[in-house]
Length: 349
Ligand code: NAD
Ligand code: WQD
Image (cartoon, rainbow, N blue to C red; front, side, top):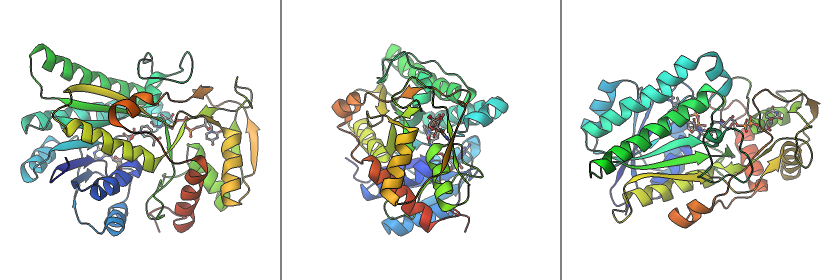
């Protein structure tokens, strides 16, 4: 199935993209990476080559540049696209929505136009559980209503709408060009077991585990737990944390599905989560148990925009692409800590 297929990985120098590059190379695919390095380092590419002992083309470029994409599709025979390139900071999207719609939506439109012009119709898109907003209940399956509450989530839903409309236009025209996988990530955490690639947030992290890691390293004095008065078992927020290695394994399974001509064309949606929710306090306990490192914390009021609980009902991915998460919480903590200890300054060192 993968044979000599060549996959364009947009945003491949980033946290999830770099892990996907490892998974694709180890699955026998050829890859070409484009990344403008707005939120990553070229060192992650060198680390991917070291882990896999394989070479690949890296283009420092912006998916918003049509000429760059046209030249890339002319130079390389691309069979499918894994589309990670995007800005992902919820708070920044609220203060600068135009940047997020331009980069995430217009950038994807530019990519789709280049794909169409060069006859490439297979794409996997990095969507997010954030498109569900605050669900009426949990666990969440793919049929739940989409209701975004910030420009970042809005940009993800808009891109999903674009792909659904492209697939519908094909159906109406009796065409079968677009074969799309919309992957709705829950909360990716962890790092490759080698400790050579991982999440390297710029500045002070917003997300729980990267912040917890900085506390454990002594770079932050304590963790602030945002709210202990949610309607959850211990009052703190509950999320579905998924190991990044499991997440990218789901991408490879989705790619196999799209490359298999026996499968329907059109737009397919899969939740990528474990189906298990953990609270903030449970995350602290799990981290301390896995690493033997204490994480001092204080309780503070809820963070605006946070929802009480969010976890996946992941059986559709299991049924349709034969994927389910395998790594447990202890492994997520161990691998995160291993990466952080080996790279206290991320890729900056
Ligand atoms: P990341 O910031 O580490 O990776 C994104 C990469 O895309 C970066 O290397 C960045 O330089 C690149 N990029 C951004 N805009 C670009 C452009 N216009 N042209 C070329 N490259 C560009 O983020 P990540 O955590 O790896 O997330 C990857 C994708 O998954 C993003 O689209 C994100 O929205 C989505 N996602 C992430 C999470 C999460 O919690 N990490 C959850 C759900 C969805
Ligand atoms: C998890 C839990 C916080 C930090 C975000 C984006 C989402 C997606 C994944 C891109 C919550 C609590 C956190 C801290 C805390 N990203 N927390 N102290 O908010 O579920 O999702 O990342 O697609 O779009 O919204 O993840 O890690 O920020 O928070 O108590 O310092 O940890 O309240 O309950 P979130 P998170």
